[in-house]
Length: 68
Image 1 (cartoon, helix red, strand yellow):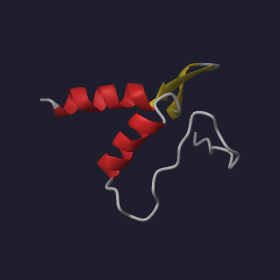
Image 2: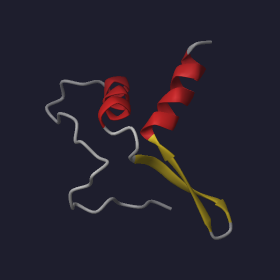
Image 3: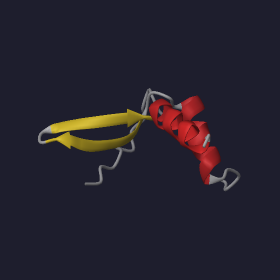
């Protein structure tokens, strides 16, 4: 299931530069620094229960995985 974010302003989100100056890993780092509490992923954890992972949590996992 794909959930689109509404175009309205968010208190937890800062838009990264959209001028192609950042690579995908750099965009993840950007969100980790400037939008750490904004949801990066939302999924069904169990029937009727959604689980949110914010950018801070996602980047902890990414850094841990790339350390090996």
